[in-house]
Image (cartoon, rainbow, N blue to C red; front, side, top):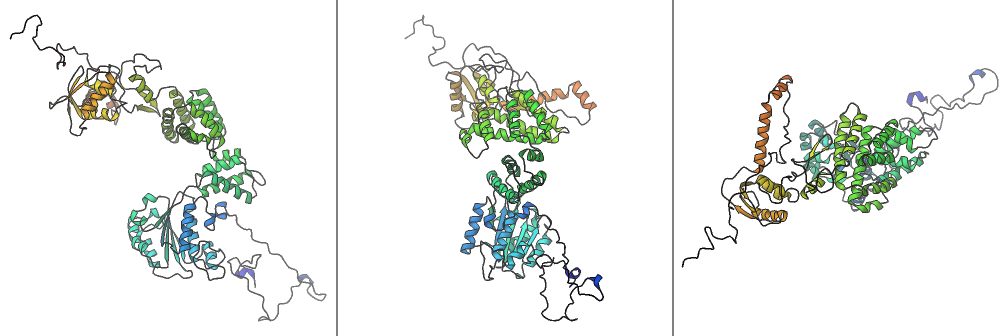
Length: 639
């Protein structure tokens, strides 16, 4: 039979469409037996020529990417999902398979693959055709073969991102009315189910809760929080974890061996780290790396580094060590080397951020330095660098790098933006952290140096970070705050830092009435703690070494310190808006606005310094050992 009428016959006697080649006829055909083929040149008298078999060129097999070629075929092939596999195996063994599953996890961890394995497990009939649902589908029966070939009529995969409307769900509900056409169980796989509309979710609820006995739903999503709780409550939810880097390295090493490719351990580590827990992403990168190496060539770490646009881990450590040591020339020189290698500046910033996180973990949990699961470079150099840095310094570097990454991604010249981030990091490397500043001021030390001494006059302190000013978490203690405060704001300033909650209440919930030496009279708002007076007295005694009397009053008193601060800010803003120069600028630049007004003369609360007050002639309250008024010891008392 001519092959061009039916299809090309493969080397195993199977047509291209999968139809087996018909057997040879047992007798003469419609026109008798086929005559043996003869050489057309030898037509005519002469000896018969033996038939010559003409080989047909086999059609080349199309290349299958590694992610499809090595897709798991059963539960044992799933890596890093032990809890899921154990639960499903027990469910099949006990006949307690749920009618609806919701699989969630990042891309490429095996959600759709798991759904297809469940579909085969539900429909497998075994090699002998008499098997039932099993956690170990045979892969050889007609049901398994059809599902593996994506042509089983009872396993329907629907992309919810493209079929997300209520009409699509109605069509699905119509399909539920029919029994399975071929298999035991009809399985509906809805991928990216979080993309369904609210109306579509509502239409799916009843079918999902009470489907026919021969229907199973398997939903997959990367955004579990976008799936309504009403849907989640009707399903068994399985969270597929990111696959650890060590498992990915082992998996990729085995696949590379099957593909006949030699790959360096450093290259495997880079691929596993770049995969970010996704098996599919990692296999795609491995595919690319093998192609980059060429025929018979090994996959080198340097090639993978260039392919991924990464900087060498040692180089990243050099840059980080230099900027945190304020060695800017070395940092910029190493940055130039990374640029020459083709490393993306944004990738370098992300690597620096990752290293800062690792150093912070080393500083907070020293035992991690002995963890064999951490690469040797990070474990050795990271542990040594973490010993030289404090957690506040690393936290500041983390915040600056986070801000810097945004700038690099938005900048027209990423290299220049990355260098500016490094310059800022090196600039603040030797500056004290806000916490150190507070401690120095509380102890009467100087901000400019570590030696004790009188602190300069001024208000709150700020450190430049990430292109902006990061204020201390609490207003810095006022430098004019002497051991014996004479004004309410000085009393409040003593509570900053060490008594954060008390400081907040004093700032917002207390109206000062009168402040005198070792005596304070206040009106407290109802929302303040009932023992605020006792807390204030204890704090003042601890800060000044003197006992203080706290009197609670019903008098109106002054506005709270927070109200005074807001009023002063409003006055400064009004004054600035009325300034002729500001009005001229606003007129010349339409749409411009006045952002903030700063006055270097104000204190941490935005108020002008307290004016020195004269001591009163007599104390407001007589001390316990005071003599009665008008008493003269030289005049004898009358009987």
